Image 1: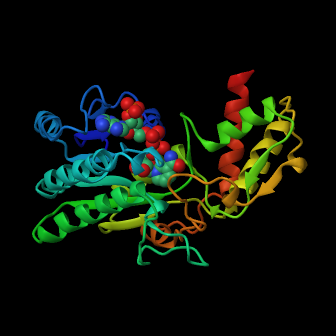
Image 2: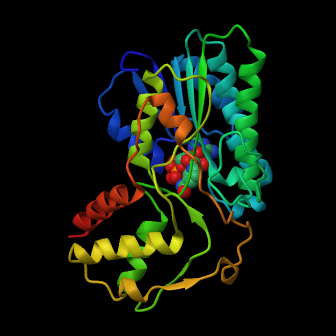
Length: 303
Ligand SMILES: NC(=O)c1ccc[n+]([C@@H]2O[C@H](COP(=O)([O-])OP(=O)(O)OC[C@H]3O[C@@H](n4cnc5c(N)ncnc54)[C@H](OP(=O)(O)O)[C@@H]3O)[C@@H](O)[C@H]2O)c1
Protein backbone atom coordinates (compact mmCIF):
# COMPACT_ATOMS: atom_id res chain seq x y z
CA UNK A 1 0.00 0.00 0.00
CA UNK A 2 2.93 2.30 0.74
CA UNK A 3 3.65 2.75 -2.99
CA UNK A 4 0.16 2.30 -4.46
CA UNK A 5 -1.83 5.29 -5.63
CA UNK A 6 -4.54 5.46 -3.00
CA UNK A 7 -7.67 7.57 -2.65
CA UNK A 8 -9.37 7.87 0.71
CA UNK A 9 -12.92 9.28 0.67
CA UNK A 10 -14.49 10.72 3.81
CA UNK A 11 -11.34 12.34 5.18
CA UNK A 12 -13.21 14.51 7.70
CA UNK A 13 -15.28 11.77 9.35
CA UNK A 14 -14.25 9.72 12.38
CA UNK A 15 -12.95 6.81 10.29
CA UNK A 16 -11.36 9.19 7.76
CA UNK A 17 -9.48 11.19 10.40
CA UNK A 18 -8.10 7.99 11.88
CA UNK A 19 -6.88 6.99 8.41
CA UNK A 20 -5.30 10.42 7.97
CA UNK A 21 -3.42 9.98 11.24
CA UNK A 22 -2.08 6.59 10.08
CA UNK A 23 -0.98 7.79 6.64
CA UNK A 24 0.28 11.28 7.32
CA UNK A 25 3.03 12.32 4.88
CA UNK A 26 2.59 9.45 2.41
CA UNK A 27 2.82 11.16 -1.00
CA UNK A 28 0.95 8.31 -2.73
CA UNK A 29 -2.19 8.80 -0.66
CA UNK A 30 -4.76 11.47 -1.42
CA UNK A 31 -7.47 12.32 1.07
CA UNK A 32 -10.79 13.47 -0.31
CA UNK A 33 -13.47 15.36 1.60
CA UNK A 34 -16.77 16.88 0.55
CA UNK A 35 -14.98 20.02 -0.73
CA UNK A 36 -12.78 18.00 -3.09
CA UNK A 37 -15.56 15.68 -4.28
CA UNK A 38 -19.23 15.83 -3.39
CA UNK A 39 -20.49 12.25 -3.48
CA UNK A 40 -23.95 13.51 -4.45
CA UNK A 41 -22.48 14.23 -7.88
CA UNK A 42 -21.66 11.27 -10.12
CA UNK A 43 -19.77 13.70 -12.41
CA UNK A 44 -17.51 14.78 -9.56
CA UNK A 45 -16.86 11.16 -8.56
CA UNK A 46 -15.96 10.17 -12.13
CA UNK A 47 -13.73 13.23 -12.53
CA UNK A 48 -11.95 12.47 -9.23
CA UNK A 49 -11.31 8.86 -10.23
CA UNK A 50 -9.99 9.94 -13.64
CA UNK A 51 -7.77 12.58 -12.07
CA UNK A 52 -6.11 10.38 -9.45
CA UNK A 53 -6.35 6.98 -11.19
CA UNK A 54 -6.14 5.13 -7.84
CA UNK A 55 -5.05 1.51 -7.46
CA UNK A 56 -6.61 1.44 -4.01
CA UNK A 57 -9.78 3.19 -2.83
CA UNK A 58 -10.77 3.36 0.82
CA UNK A 59 -14.33 4.63 1.17
CA UNK A 60 -14.87 5.95 4.69
CA UNK A 61 -17.47 8.49 3.51
CA UNK A 62 -21.13 7.83 4.16
CA UNK A 63 -24.49 9.41 4.79
CA UNK A 64 -24.64 8.65 8.54
CA UNK A 65 -27.64 10.70 9.76
CA UNK A 66 -29.65 7.62 10.77
CA UNK A 67 -32.93 9.40 11.65
CA UNK A 68 -32.78 12.09 8.97
CA UNK A 69 -32.32 9.35 6.36
CA UNK A 70 -35.99 8.42 6.82
CA UNK A 71 -36.79 11.73 5.05
CA UNK A 72 -33.76 11.81 2.73
CA UNK A 73 -34.16 8.53 0.93
CA UNK A 74 -32.74 9.59 -2.42
CA UNK A 75 -29.77 11.42 -0.91
CA UNK A 76 -28.84 8.57 1.44
CA UNK A 77 -29.06 6.09 -1.46
CA UNK A 78 -26.91 8.34 -3.64
CA UNK A 79 -24.09 8.56 -1.09
CA UNK A 80 -24.31 5.08 0.41
CA UNK A 81 -25.07 3.06 -2.74
CA UNK A 82 -24.54 4.98 -6.00
CA UNK A 83 -21.18 6.47 -4.98
CA UNK A 84 -19.70 3.09 -3.89
CA UNK A 85 -21.05 1.56 -7.12
CA UNK A 86 -18.91 3.98 -9.16
CA UNK A 87 -15.89 3.24 -6.97
CA UNK A 88 -16.43 -0.52 -7.34
CA UNK A 89 -16.84 -0.21 -11.12
CA UNK A 90 -13.58 1.70 -11.35
CA UNK A 91 -11.57 -0.64 -9.10
CA UNK A 92 -12.98 -3.82 -10.67
CA UNK A 93 -11.39 -2.65 -13.95
CA UNK A 94 -8.07 -1.72 -12.34
CA UNK A 95 -5.42 -4.47 -12.45
CA UNK A 96 -4.75 -5.68 -8.89
CA UNK A 97 -6.92 -2.87 -7.54
CA UNK A 98 -8.44 -2.93 -4.07
CA UNK A 99 -11.60 -1.32 -2.71
CA UNK A 100 -12.17 -1.07 1.04
CA UNK A 101 -15.66 0.05 1.99
CA UNK A 102 -17.00 0.63 5.51
CA UNK A 103 -20.46 -0.73 6.28
CA UNK A 104 -22.60 -1.23 9.33
CA UNK A 105 -24.39 -3.48 11.83
CA UNK A 106 -27.61 -1.64 10.80
CA UNK A 107 -27.92 -4.00 7.81
CA UNK A 108 -29.35 -6.47 10.39
CA UNK A 109 -32.71 -6.29 12.15
CA UNK A 110 -31.18 -7.34 15.48
CA UNK A 111 -33.57 -10.23 16.14
CA UNK A 112 -30.83 -12.89 16.33
CA UNK A 113 -29.94 -14.09 19.83
CA UNK A 114 -26.25 -14.57 19.05
CA UNK A 115 -23.54 -12.63 17.21
CA UNK A 116 -24.25 -12.15 13.51
CA UNK A 117 -22.16 -14.00 10.94
CA UNK A 118 -21.31 -12.49 7.55
CA UNK A 119 -23.56 -15.10 5.95
CA UNK A 120 -26.61 -14.26 8.09
CA UNK A 121 -29.74 -12.87 6.51
CA UNK A 122 -29.85 -9.07 6.45
CA UNK A 123 -33.00 -7.05 7.17
CA UNK A 124 -32.37 -3.37 7.85
CA UNK A 125 -34.93 -1.61 10.03
CA UNK A 126 -34.55 1.86 8.54
CA UNK A 127 -33.48 3.77 5.45
CA UNK A 128 -29.86 4.28 6.58
CA UNK A 129 -29.43 0.51 6.95
CA UNK A 130 -31.22 -0.07 3.65
CA UNK A 131 -28.98 2.36 1.81
CA UNK A 132 -25.83 0.82 3.34
CA UNK A 133 -27.07 -2.66 2.39
CA UNK A 134 -27.67 -1.46 -1.18
CA UNK A 135 -24.05 -0.25 -1.19
CA UNK A 136 -22.84 -3.70 -0.12
CA UNK A 137 -24.97 -5.47 -2.73
CA UNK A 138 -23.93 -3.21 -5.58
CA UNK A 139 -20.23 -3.66 -4.80
CA UNK A 140 -20.59 -7.44 -4.68
CA UNK A 141 -22.64 -7.54 -7.90
CA UNK A 142 -20.10 -5.50 -9.82
CA UNK A 143 -17.19 -7.71 -8.77
CA UNK A 144 -19.24 -10.86 -9.46
CA UNK A 145 -19.93 -9.66 -12.99
CA UNK A 146 -16.20 -9.13 -13.67
CA UNK A 147 -15.08 -12.75 -13.52
CA UNK A 148 -11.61 -12.01 -14.97
CA UNK A 149 -10.93 -9.14 -12.60
CA UNK A 150 -7.64 -9.25 -10.69
CA UNK A 151 -8.90 -6.73 -8.19
CA UNK A 152 -10.47 -7.24 -4.76
CA UNK A 153 -13.03 -5.65 -2.49
CA UNK A 154 -13.38 -5.69 1.26
CA UNK A 155 -16.61 -4.60 2.94
CA UNK A 156 -15.92 -3.92 6.62
CA UNK A 157 -19.10 -4.05 8.68
CA UNK A 158 -18.46 -2.30 11.94
CA UNK A 159 -20.52 -0.88 14.83
CA UNK A 160 -20.66 1.81 17.54
CA UNK A 161 -17.69 3.71 16.07
CA UNK A 162 -15.84 6.36 18.09
CA UNK A 163 -12.90 8.55 17.16
CA UNK A 164 -12.26 12.20 16.36
CA UNK A 165 -15.85 13.42 15.98
CA UNK A 166 -19.24 13.29 17.66
CA UNK A 167 -20.00 9.94 19.27
CA UNK A 168 -21.78 8.25 22.17
CA UNK A 169 -18.75 8.13 24.51
CA UNK A 170 -18.07 11.86 24.21
CA UNK A 171 -21.76 12.58 24.75
CA UNK A 172 -21.84 10.45 27.93
CA UNK A 173 -18.71 12.11 29.34
CA UNK A 174 -20.20 15.54 28.67
CA UNK A 175 -23.56 14.64 30.24
CA UNK A 176 -21.78 13.15 33.27
CA UNK A 177 -20.16 16.55 33.85
CA UNK A 178 -23.41 18.48 33.39
CA UNK A 179 -26.07 16.33 35.09
CA UNK A 180 -26.33 14.51 38.38
CA UNK A 181 -28.63 11.84 36.92
CA UNK A 182 -28.25 9.80 33.76
CA UNK A 183 -30.48 7.18 32.13
CA UNK A 184 -29.00 4.94 29.43
CA UNK A 185 -30.43 2.13 27.27
CA UNK A 186 -29.64 -1.32 28.68
CA UNK A 187 -31.36 -3.62 26.19
CA UNK A 188 -29.45 -2.92 22.98
CA UNK A 189 -26.29 -5.01 22.61
CA UNK A 190 -23.22 -4.35 20.50
CA UNK A 191 -19.47 -3.87 20.28
CA UNK A 192 -17.87 -0.40 20.45
CA UNK A 193 -15.22 -0.04 17.72
CA UNK A 194 -12.34 2.40 17.72
CA UNK A 195 -11.82 4.29 14.44
CA UNK A 196 -8.08 4.13 15.06
CA UNK A 197 -8.17 0.34 15.38
CA UNK A 198 -10.31 0.11 12.22
CA UNK A 199 -7.68 2.09 10.31
CA UNK A 200 -5.07 -0.46 11.42
CA UNK A 201 -7.36 -3.30 10.28
CA UNK A 202 -7.68 -1.64 6.85
CA UNK A 203 -3.89 -1.52 6.49
CA UNK A 204 -3.54 -5.17 7.51
CA UNK A 205 -6.31 -6.34 5.17
CA UNK A 206 -4.85 -4.51 2.18
CA UNK A 207 -1.44 -6.09 2.86
CA UNK A 208 -2.95 -9.56 3.38
CA UNK A 209 -3.93 -12.19 0.87
CA UNK A 210 -7.50 -12.18 2.20
CA UNK A 211 -10.23 -12.92 -0.33
CA UNK A 212 -12.80 -10.39 -1.47
CA UNK A 213 -15.87 -10.31 0.75
CA UNK A 214 -17.67 -8.96 3.76
CA UNK A 215 -15.76 -8.92 7.06
CA UNK A 216 -17.28 -8.16 10.45
CA UNK A 217 -14.76 -5.71 11.87
CA UNK A 218 -15.24 -5.28 15.57
CA UNK A 219 -12.95 -5.85 18.57
CA UNK A 220 -13.51 -8.73 21.00
CA UNK A 221 -16.20 -8.69 23.69
CA UNK A 222 -19.64 -7.14 23.80
CA UNK A 223 -21.69 -4.75 25.90
CA UNK A 224 -24.81 -2.57 25.97
CA UNK A 225 -25.10 1.22 25.71
CA UNK A 226 -25.55 1.24 29.49
CA UNK A 227 -22.45 -0.93 29.96
CA UNK A 228 -20.42 1.33 27.69
CA UNK A 229 -21.58 4.50 29.45
CA UNK A 230 -20.76 3.07 32.91
CA UNK A 231 -17.33 1.89 31.76
CA UNK A 232 -16.39 5.19 30.08
CA UNK A 233 -17.60 7.29 33.03
CA UNK A 234 -15.89 5.05 35.59
CA UNK A 235 -12.64 5.30 33.60
CA UNK A 236 -12.90 9.09 33.46
CA UNK A 237 -13.53 9.19 37.21
CA UNK A 238 -10.46 7.06 37.92
CA UNK A 239 -8.45 9.50 35.80
CA UNK A 240 -9.46 12.32 38.14
CA UNK A 241 -12.26 13.89 36.09
CA UNK A 242 -14.78 15.90 38.08
CA UNK A 243 -18.15 14.31 37.32
CA UNK A 244 -21.57 14.97 38.77
CA UNK A 245 -22.77 11.44 38.10
CA UNK A 246 -21.57 8.48 40.07
CA UNK A 247 -21.09 5.55 37.62
CA UNK A 248 -22.98 3.23 40.01
CA UNK A 249 -25.97 5.56 39.86
CA UNK A 250 -26.45 5.52 36.07
CA UNK A 251 -29.97 4.23 35.53
CA UNK A 252 -30.75 1.51 33.02
CA UNK A 253 -33.66 2.31 30.67
CA UNK A 254 -35.32 0.24 27.96
CA UNK A 255 -34.98 1.46 24.37
CA UNK A 256 -38.77 1.84 24.24
CA UNK A 257 -38.35 4.96 26.43
CA UNK A 258 -36.50 6.67 23.57
CA UNK A 259 -38.61 6.33 20.42
CA UNK A 260 -36.70 7.51 17.35
CA UNK A 261 -37.73 7.96 13.70
CA UNK A 262 -35.48 5.03 12.71
CA UNK A 263 -35.61 1.99 15.00
CA UNK A 264 -32.23 0.58 16.09
CA UNK A 265 -31.41 -3.15 16.19
CA UNK A 266 -31.59 -4.71 19.67
CA UNK A 267 -28.68 -6.96 18.78
CA UNK A 268 -25.76 -5.40 16.89
CA UNK A 269 -23.21 -8.01 17.91
CA UNK A 270 -21.16 -9.34 14.99
CA UNK A 271 -18.88 -12.37 15.00
CA UNK A 272 -15.32 -11.35 14.01
CA UNK A 273 -13.77 -14.80 13.41
CA UNK A 274 -13.74 -14.51 9.61
CA UNK A 275 -11.62 -11.36 9.85
CA UNK A 276 -9.32 -12.91 12.45
CA UNK A 277 -8.80 -15.96 10.23
CA UNK A 278 -8.09 -13.78 7.20
CA UNK A 279 -5.48 -11.79 9.13
CA UNK A 280 -4.20 -14.85 11.01
CA UNK A 281 -4.74 -13.15 14.35
CA UNK A 282 -5.95 -15.25 17.29
CA UNK A 283 -7.35 -12.41 19.40
CA UNK A 284 -8.37 -8.84 18.80
CA UNK A 285 -8.18 -6.33 21.66
CA UNK A 286 -11.17 -6.30 24.01
CA UNK A 287 -13.41 -3.26 23.51
CA UNK A 288 -12.69 -2.17 27.12
CA UNK A 289 -8.96 -1.68 26.50
CA UNK A 290 -9.67 0.49 23.45
CA UNK A 291 -12.34 2.57 25.21
CA UNK A 292 -10.01 3.02 28.16
CA UNK A 293 -7.25 4.41 25.90
CA UNK A 294 -9.78 6.64 24.17
CA UNK A 295 -11.14 8.08 27.41
CA UNK A 296 -7.55 8.75 28.55
CA UNK A 297 -7.00 10.74 25.36
CA UNK A 298 -10.22 12.74 25.76
CA UNK A 299 -9.51 13.50 29.42
CA UNK A 300 -5.94 14.61 28.69
CA UNK A 301 -7.23 16.93 25.94
CA UNK A 302 -9.64 18.52 28.45
CA UNK A 303 -6.88 19.20 31.00
N1 LIG B 1 -20.40 6.05 13.47
C1 LIG B 1 -20.84 4.81 13.76
O1 LIG B 1 -21.23 4.51 14.90
C2 LIG B 1 -20.83 3.75 12.69
C3 LIG B 1 -21.34 2.46 13.02
C4 LIG B 1 -21.32 1.47 12.05
C5 LIG B 1 -20.80 1.73 10.80
N2 LIG B 1 -20.34 2.97 10.50
C6 LIG B 1 -19.83 3.21 9.14
O2 LIG B 1 -18.46 3.57 9.25
C7 LIG B 1 -18.12 4.51 8.24
C8 LIG B 1 -17.46 5.72 8.85
O3 LIG B 1 -18.35 6.31 9.80
P1 LIG B 1 -17.94 7.61 10.59
O4 LIG B 1 -18.39 7.43 12.00
O5 LIG B 1 -16.52 7.97 10.31
O6 LIG B 1 -18.93 8.67 9.89
P2 LIG B 1 -18.88 10.24 9.95
O7 LIG B 1 -18.00 10.70 11.06
O8 LIG B 1 -20.30 10.69 9.91
O9 LIG B 1 -18.17 10.63 8.58
C9 LIG B 1 -18.79 10.47 7.35
C10 LIG B 1 -18.05 11.32 6.35
O10 LIG B 1 -18.73 11.20 5.10
C11 LIG B 1 -18.73 12.47 4.50
N3 LIG B 1 -19.81 12.69 3.56
C12 LIG B 1 -21.15 12.64 3.81
N4 LIG B 1 -21.82 13.05 2.72
C13 LIG B 1 -20.90 13.37 1.78
C14 LIG B 1 -20.97 13.86 0.47
N5 LIG B 1 -22.13 14.14 -0.12
N6 LIG B 1 -19.82 14.06 -0.21
C15 LIG B 1 -18.65 13.81 0.37
N7 LIG B 1 -18.49 13.36 1.62
C16 LIG B 1 -19.62 13.15 2.32
C17 LIG B 1 -18.90 13.45 5.65
O11 LIG B 1 -18.45 14.70 5.20
P3 LIG B 1 -18.62 16.04 6.08
O12 LIG B 1 -17.57 15.90 7.15
O13 LIG B 1 -18.35 17.13 5.13
O14 LIG B 1 -20.02 16.02 6.60
C18 LIG B 1 -18.05 12.81 6.73
O15 LIG B 1 -16.74 13.31 6.72
C19 LIG B 1 -19.42 4.79 7.46
O16 LIG B 1 -19.47 3.94 6.35
C20 LIG B 1 -20.52 4.37 8.43
O17 LIG B 1 -21.68 3.95 7.74
C21 LIG B 1 -20.33 3.98 11.42
